[in-house]
Image (cartoon, rainbow, N blue to C red; front, side):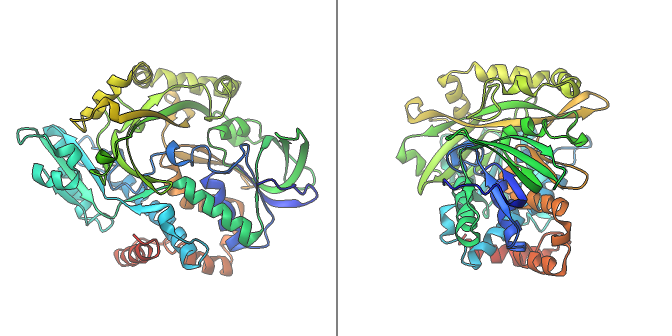
Length: 495
């Protein structure tokens, strides 16, 4: 997508990064106010090449149906589902946005990016099985999750996920749950569709091979964005009222150049991911499920092992992981100096504090990095006993930068999840962090719009449009409205 950038325009919004976040924000902005002047800039030669790419993320529609880290066990033994409710609602808001685009004939063939794949949780041992049953009972009482099934029966598990259950005996203590409305999402394909709508319907193309080098306050408008064309080496300065930094791991490095006090103290810890990918079609056909288990007692949430059916480029796939790797890069296509460049005077203390209080994470990463193929296969065999080494290959996934921020008790805290950093007036916003990321893009970008363009969202026209696009946004969640919207998105997305 090579287009000449018009440097004479004063833009309303410049989005840095060509991933799912910028695509969602830009399209939502144009739907609500078509005359907004929006510009999208991407450093690589195409969109959705980093965190949004299909192989660079898990593809699970993170709706808390199977991810056990969203349901912590409290000290008194009860299971909290507060975070699960929040995540589930956010994913359903994403589905509503995509459904609106399908119903408006802006997206055709939703099966190109979303498929129905049941979500399961599976654990071993009495303690974990009792926990899973306790979670099931709490889930069953909430309308978001009331279709959940639970079993300790090996024959039932064989019908749910035969690859895992076959070859096991009744004296093995196990438990599993299932919610059959789970999804598998190709966020790369979705991102490309969103940008296609922007280009064809709103004449808003993505400008690729453009590196944003700095964002400075401007006397005339709000921000001056300094950029470089990586092909021609030409440098430009653009003026914009609002800037959104959604450049994955590179967001932190750009945020640190922006002159706002809200950026103070933020640091980042890069973690790369790896998958075992099955190359045997006969095995791939035997598994149609996403099966998540529990992370080890000292392992981080990102290490939750899962055996997943994927649909990528029209082909069914099977993968297991994630395995962690370490690279000082903040992007897959980043620099080995990224981590070093991110260390500044205001975040030295938080980063040292986070390191000191996360020594188990360091130990975990060292163990992961030193694994060989057989070590990884043995991890897989905890799931799928008959896995043969020749049937699986290692694939390097995306690069994630976990947030480090100030903490008055620990000096610095490593935070899992995503966070929007914003100037007081909302004229510049930056997304930091990782999972559940893409699954909650619509919800997160609506929050960005609320900060940046409150006058649009709070106008009568804006409220009316939003109610059509995302009916569950900013409304009290009720069983009736949820079930109605679930039925509607099921039909629109052909699930």
